[in-house]
Amino acid sequence: MTLNDVTATSEEPVIINSTGTVDVNGGDFQTTGTKSCFVNSSANLTINKGITTDGTFASEGASCINNKWGLVEINGGTITSGAACTIENRGSLRMNKGTVASTNPGAAVIDCTGNYGGAWINGGTIKGGQDGILLKDLGSSGVTLTQATFEGNTNDIHLGDGQKINIKKTFTGTATILTDDPSLGRHITLENEDLSYQNKLKLFSKNSGYIIGYKRGDDGVEYRYLADANGSIVNAVNAKATANLGAGEQELDTATVVPENTTVTVTANLPEGAEGAEFLGWSAVRDDGKALDLVVGDDDEQTAHFKMPGCNVTVEALYQGGNVDPVNPGGGSSSDVVAGIAAVALTGAAVWGIYETGTGIYRVLNMPGVPMPSNRAGLATLIWEKAGCPEPQTVKSFSDIDDADLHLRQAASWMEEQGLMDDVKENEFRPYRYVTKLQTCLVWDKAKEKSLIS
Image 1 (spheres, rainbow, N blue to C red):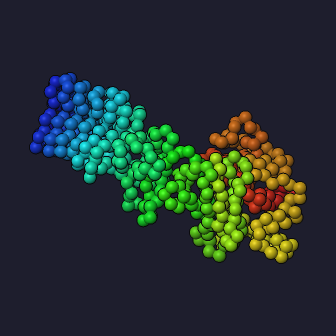
Image 2 (tube, rainbow, N blue to C red; image 1 turned 60 degrees about the vertical axis):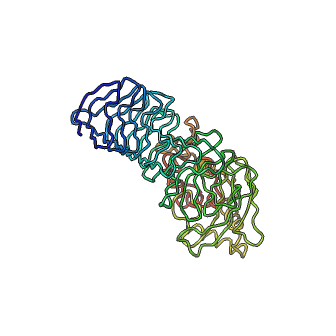
Image 3 (cartoon, helix red, strand yellow; image 1 turned 30 degrees about the horizontal axis):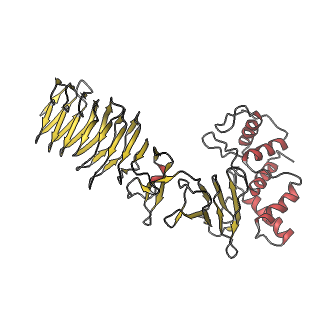
C-alpha cells in the first residue's frame, strides 16, 4: 500500500501493518487516544517526504511508531509523541533523514530496549527527550550511529548496564553519553575496523566525575571508554608516556586522565622521517608554571619518570639534526641556528652531548644578561621590547589573550607579523605554553638576522 499526502486522525492506530509493505509519502497522521500511530509487526514500513507535504506523524498517549519484529525506514517527515518514547523499536530501524522528537522532556526519543533487529542511525535529527537514544538489553543486536544531529536532549545517548554503541568515523556531530554503570574503564563504543578515528569523536560524559577518553587495544584498534575525571593529562611530544592505572601499564594520550601521585614513565621517540637525529634531552613543564621533578634514567637518558602532579603536564624529547626542526616557535627553519649553537658548544666545551652546554654558551656569547622567559608570552614580550616596542600594523585580538592586555597583544601581533612566532592556530596565541631555552635562542637569532634587534 502507498499513501501519498494522506490526512488521517484516529483514536486507534492509523496503520496496523502485520505482514505487508506500506510506503507513507508525507501527509498528516494523528492519534488522539492511547494507541500508537503506526504498529508494524513482522512487516515493512517506509516513511518519506511527501509530494506536496513534508509529513507530520504524531501520537499523544503512546509511541508514534511501535515496531515489533518489522523493518521501519525513515527518510523524511517529522515524527513526535508525548508518551514515554516516540519510537519503540523492537525490530529493525533505519533512520536516514527527517526528525524524530519528543514533546515529553522526561521521555526517550528512540527506545531500543529489547531491540532484536538492530538500529542504524544514518542521518536526521533526534531531539527534545530525556534520552535521545536509549539502549538497554540489546542482546546480540546493536545500534550503529553513522550521522545524526542531537538537539535539546538531556542525554543524547543513554547506555544501560554493559551496553555499547557502534559510532562510526562519519559521525561529525556532538553527543552526550549517560551510563548506568559508571565504573573506571567502562567500554563505551564498539571497537571499529578503523585504526585511528576514535580520538576525533566529540563525545561527552553526563556522569558526574567521569570523562570519555579513548584507548587503543592490543590489536591497534581504538575505542572510547569512561574514565575517572579525578586527575590530569600528560601531553607527550616526541615521546611515549605510560602509567599503571589499575589494569597494567598502558600508553597515555591526551584523553587519558592520570590521578595525582601516579608514576608516569616517558620514553623518547625519534620523530618520523628524522633518522640520524641526535637526542638532546628533556623539556618538562607543569601547567601551573612550577618545575616538574623529572628523574632521568642512569643508564638510559632517553627514559625518565615523574610523579603526576595535580595539573596537566607537557614532556618533550628534544632532538637536533636528521632534518628535525627542534622546538621552533617561529615556524621557520632553524637548522643554521642549531648548527651555529653546536659549533660554539664544540669549540668552547669540546663536547656537545649536553643540551644545557650548547644553549648556555650561545647565551653567554650572544645574549649576555638577557633573562630566559618561561612561556610564549614572555618570549614575545622580550623580543618586542628589545626591538624598541614598535607598533604592529594591526593589533590583533587573540582568543586566549585578554583584550585589556594591550602590551601583550601588541607584542604578539608584531612577532607574528615579523615571522618570528607565526604559528598562531585558529586565532590562539597560546601565551602560557612553555618555551625552552633553545626556543628562545632560535627566535633571538632569527630576530638578529632580520636586523630587528642588535
